[in-house]
Image 1: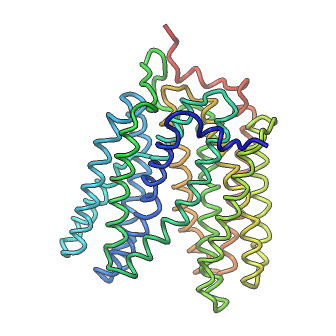
Image 2: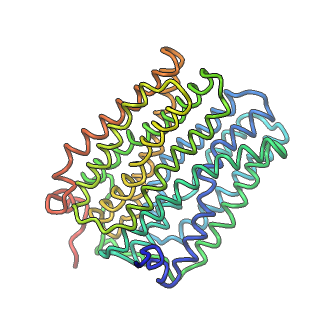
Image 3: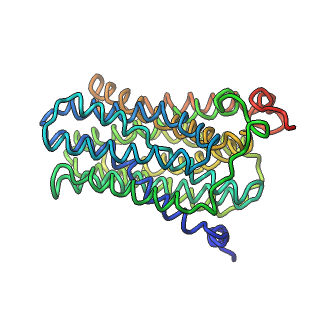
Length: 405
């Protein structure tokens, strides 16, 4: 039996840019928690650490689609290289400011400039799309990237916190910044696989977010992101209430494992169902598997329920990015992918806040009600948008696409 993952890496250059992109995206998970770990130790104030980290995360969520739009217009190297340089220098300044106890405004200013970092997941998916456009291998490539994203979120956060705790407060951020510089340089220097710039007359005018399918998918994934952020926060609260706080990292790891395993399996299959139906099935599973979380009362049952609730996360992302590739013109693909990843990030932030409020107000177990509500909204959104997500119903595409000359 042929290995579909071996097939995608037979294409020239794919091994190189995939490896570099994995290194370059580790800071996605390392930086936000690394800022908290660093500043909470150097300044002893969690509110300041959280505020600076939130500044970075929220500004990045706002800027990423704009940076990606420039990438579509000018090329990956032309835009991502200088933006990454600004981000690396800003992170370095933030590290020095924390170590030297510079005024608080320097921390916020550095975090704001660091948020110019380009979306590596969008850049690498654009390269896969250029190689395998309209071919079944693209689904496998997206599955590989979703699995890589899972590993990044699990390994990156743990590595960042572990380094800061074991070595010195700034250690996590130092390594994160180094990996960002190294991985991005290695990725961008591979010019042979860089997607060509498509001129406006052959591509898009306006923003990808004007397209109805992009709006539907981004909105749905805001709530999908909220479900797994809520699961992480509530898991920490429940394990602490059960007197086993050390079990939280294991349970969260099991959650990512469920998503990773099924994502790999789905990527190896050649599913025939339309992508919009695959997305509906995946989100249905997410919504239904939030319900058992309401009834867990021991760490083992929590681990089992969390594992089950995570199995459809990667398949959801795989089909979502596949739909973006189908509906978004090539000239705005990077921006389209970035809107989806931005939606996930916004959902994680909102989910964490809502779950924290529920836990504080009604107790640890009730944090999972946020997952239930978010799953239901995500499912309703996807079901309502089935026609618009079907290729033959893509009536909005022409509004953002200039006619070819």
